[in-house]
Image (cartoon, rainbow over the protein chains, first blue to last red):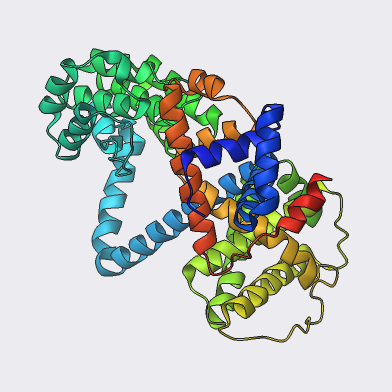
Length: 248
Length: 191
């Protein structure tokens, strides 16, 4: 059975009991006569039933994040092991000197070094979307080629109201990368809590404020991320620890 | 940490406890699955699905441990993997529980959970935007409400919803572990 937008809409309205009486009668008639439609309705119903169990879905999301974190930690540990085998002696000396300096001089990285260490541009989502205008696609292409000036130039030619949250993250990053932090902040701040890009926006807000030396605000956004308890939590905790050293 | 503390942590979604449990048990499961024709992705799938099985049992107050949690959990993983191997027709391992292995979770119980595991696996692999949109659709929110929440137009939401859902259904249906649903089950569940 060919899947279409209309078919999906009708099945969903049938399942949520929002078809009108006559629409429902017509659909049920067709359903009785069409085994392929019966199967499709059953598939939609099953999908809906399974994914309506929010607790299980959230739990699975959390496990996926934890799984990725552990994999990353294992990879890091492995890389470190190999590295240490070759240059153990040199590292021991460096660590020794580093620890001495750290202890005696209460050393902490300056804000700009911290920003450089934690910042990496938001990766381009290569998913192709329909309904997205050519001009927005061009912005995305320019961003993927790291032509940040072009991103800003092209975006200035279209209305702000058409920007998706994804675009706003690209634009915020572009302004940040050409040292126009105020504009970057404006774009990141527009991304609402319910957005799928909210965490990214909060992360970049903290980094933007770190870059301009406003530690108080940087700490505020990092704490937000820790409280949000999502995929940025671990990085946020690390950054917060480093920033608190800076403040002290 | 005692078994009771771990189980409480899982049911209360305590991230620290869940992560510690994950880290402590992964290596045993990995060793077993890799030794029995599995790969890295199989390990991750089986391991996470087994924790979900445990979580579901805790939510429904349907868990009585007669062995140590570690042994019980390993038993769930083994049964899940045996069932998947049989489906993949790679190899069939006879189901003979080892001493101390769990006794109360049968292959039949697990079959009923497999569909949910498969659907959730592909759902969480969607983009965050797709996940958020479909969650709103499954809450029976109207397109107008969804458009307001997501700040997209209704037309965009409708198209996006269709693409996300179609892609999700296709991914699920293309998985070798997918069991076709039956209309009779739908009729039964609708009664």
